[in-house]
Image (cartoon, rainbow, N blue to C red; front, side, top):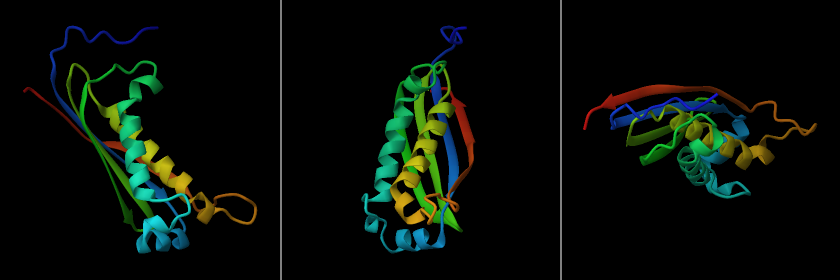
Length: 147
């Protein structure tokens, strides 16, 4: 078992966008629409953005076969869509290998952060979260181009 050898590959501009969705209850969505700072733990979107950015930059520490990539930009967007919140993570680097895993890691951690921030609003009488579901985490765009 070993990492893939990318030493023979040239440095090129690499970009990836990943997105995912977290389904939430109508009550939670109403709170977020009014002001996401009304949640007891604080600002949901800003906390999720920061968590996603940090996670994308630390992908190599979380996934054993991922190469350390010289990330030059990470951004995370979150917005209410239908019955939940959509998250999108963009990662850019100039390196020998792609940044898809970094974008996937960023978006997944952003969604998990939303879940953590709103779990008090989502908990039912049994202590479960029947309305919360994270779905559709995928790479939606991948770009590779010479400098």
